[in-house]
Image 1 (cartoon, helix red, strand yellow):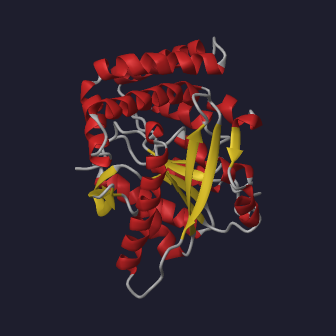
Image 2 (image 1 turned 90 degrees about the vertical axis):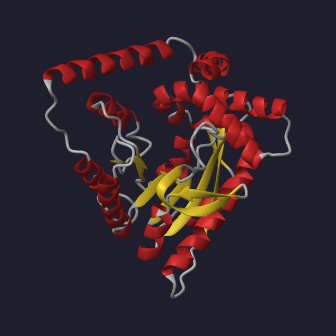
Length: 325
């Protein structure tokens, strides 16, 4: 049982209700199974080398091939870096973009070996542990928000080792066999389960359904993790590097309505290794008579923190994601 008395399976039960398994046509099922077996082969291959060696090889490959294989995302990365750092030279921006591909190459291998990472206690350090220990035994309902930095999945780790049974929101994979495999691989990281947002971009109905379920989860004392640094066409405009960016506000909205704490977290890679430190900071949510103004103010402060973090380690943020319209 978690410390607040909530059943440990509560999050798993809710997560399972979001994306029910639908009958799959025979040909489509055959394709899904082929994709699943291909993934398992790649995963098995990634385990053939020591973790650091495999990550370095993947980083080297991504740095050189990603800009060629996916020129659209590379161009987006350079454009985003230009928005954030207008004073940098083209060569400096290119260096950041290439380093960000390296980081993603490492993340790919780490994703396949996430269980190995979290079971090696020497690989993850919690920065400023006194802050963490102060709240460890009186956490209450929490919304944890991170950004795509370092290996962002590990940002939830402090809540996991605190016995808080955290759950998380993630974008479901269309292939149900792959999706279930990814869920199973993360069971020890997210004991509360995973809430799938749906695999189709712009599925507003599915997003509304997910929002209702996760709000209920937090209201009942759950601890929920999510990332909040992507463009969201249904979001609210928030300044980010001086330019308005439509940003998903559901995490802050839930916390404001149910009285949950919001913790911001970043996971920073140590050099070019698969070792990390995680930093937590509390985001204070205003609670005035104007709920909308409170949410906008909290979102603006959140993105200011994220901007500061990105400026410190620009090579570790995912510049190739869409951020501005």
